[in-house]
Amino acid sequence: MTRRGWMDIGTELFRDALARLTDAELDAPSLLPGWTRKHVVVHVHHNAEALRRLVRWAATGVEHRMYKDERQRTDEIEASAQLPAARVRALVAQSADALSADLDALSPDAWSRLVVTAQGRTVAATEIPWMRAREVAVHAVDLAAGVGFADLPEDLNAALIADAVARQCRRAHRRSPGTGPVALDRPRTGPGGKASRGPRPLAHRGARTCDHRVTRGTRLA
Image 1 (cartoon, rainbow, N blue to C red):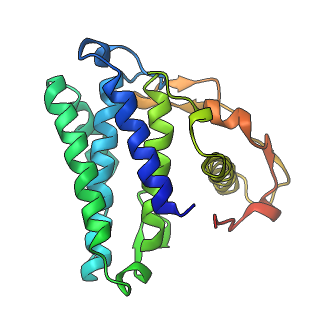
Image 2 (image 1 turned 180 degrees about the horizontal axis):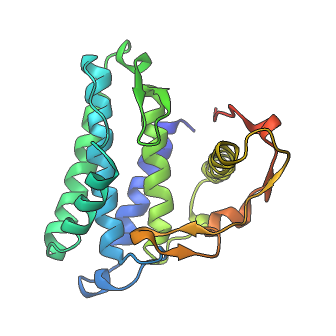
Image 3 (image 1 turned 45 degrees about the vertical axis):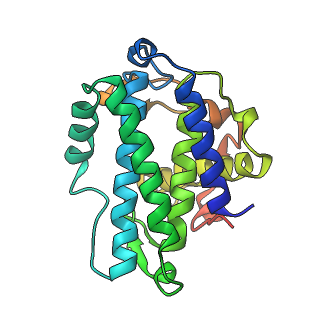
């Protein structure tokens, strides 16, 4: 399946998970420490808007970063999490549709243009559908509304596992370059800066260690 196919499937799963929740249930905790379900929903909305900025960069050649800085991302999420549930539902639906339309309008040349992710990685615009697929698929599970990783296509799960391992290995390498294998099960910081001792549920489904000498530069197909 293509990355765009994964994105579309993940989006539908996220919509389905959201539709299962009442407005009151959106204020209950999600699977992400420190975040309610509403926080997850508005994060997915703002992620779509941020990715639309990358699409605009690819379409025009004029730089448009996902976020001005980390503070912008945090402030947007916290402010939007205070909105009424109906408004939150409308925003996440509208931004998802707008992102899809923007991607559909990209020219063949624009897909090869380089953009910069929020983590500072320079990638081709062809990476954008994957970036969105990862967000909507994983956060559909984070809503704790009956959608699990078993509901995802097998090839998407495999790609998510490979990506999770590669991302943790890149972080580990930046912290301790030149070392050997590094264990992946280590504390992570949740929303609001709260420490969470356990790895994300997905981490249990992939490799538990990485070797910088092997994994540096790993890319998904």
